[in-house]
Length: 107
Length: 121
Picture 1 (cartoon, rainbow over the protein chains, first blue to last red):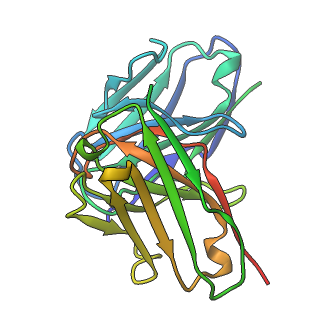
Picture 2 (picture 1 turned 180 degrees about the vertical axis):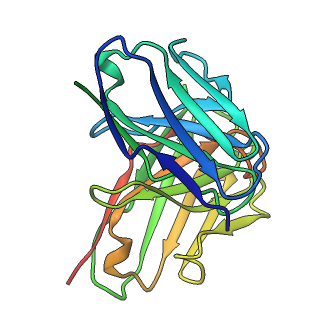
Picture 3 (picture 1 turned 60 degrees about the horizontal axis):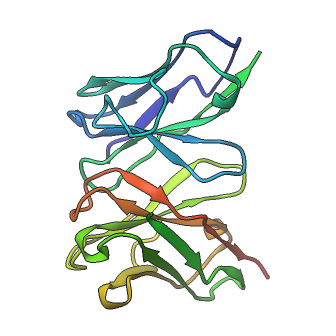
């Protein structure tokens, strides 16, 4: 099975900072990658699909890139409401594995 | 507006069974695959199972294969997860999610509010 390895597992940054989270697939998944945001006590929310397509309604400070095995979620200017755990996911074939998550906090 | 409402969670003894339901509204249910995802307390997301829009294709994580059965009743706009031989490791919040197409190979949006399953004696 293809594994999804996210890094870092946690990070602390200041408001306005650029934040980058990476996800590595153990095999080529072309662009079948998504990113989700889960705020504390809330339901996961889709941010990015097809590796780089922003879901409707998601702020433009979020962006995704990558293909093949390496994927990146970038927050261009971190805001207080971005405090959350972020997960990548592969969806090219079963199992539809999630990464381990990256917890983002404000410094 | 798409709405997904899970039900059926609760406390069950090890070795027991439970059936979860997810009532869907706001979209043509049969046009979309559906999935179950779980989250153990304080842990990350774990994909559990998916089913195609017609119900003809079903897929499972290795951790639940042979114990859980996903199904759907398109006439009732309802998704199910039959869980048998439950262990403490199955304790989690279970979310249903709408898949982006009729086949299961797509992302999940939106997600339901989740239902808590606790396996304990």
